[in-house]
Length: 95
Image (cartoon, rainbow, N blue to C red):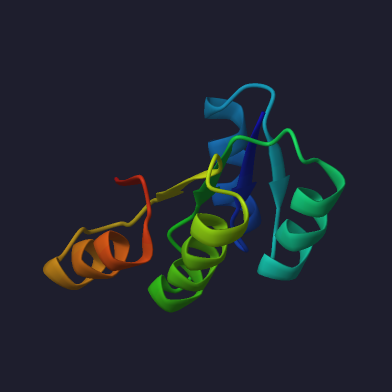
């Protein structure tokens, strides 16, 4: 399964429709609860409304505690900073 975290309800709905069968939440706290309740989750898609720093914190945690969990960062515009943070924190993809 794939988990989506995106505070904006309309964007969250679009992402969930694109990723059929995914679970979507609106905050990083809700995501933490979802991941704790569902250890079979294999990917987290972080929506564009989540800050890069919050996404990096999750990716760093996942790299140590759940190395099988892929973290994918979605951005409205990809810049060098987002790519640099993603690379350092262990995210699998930036889109």
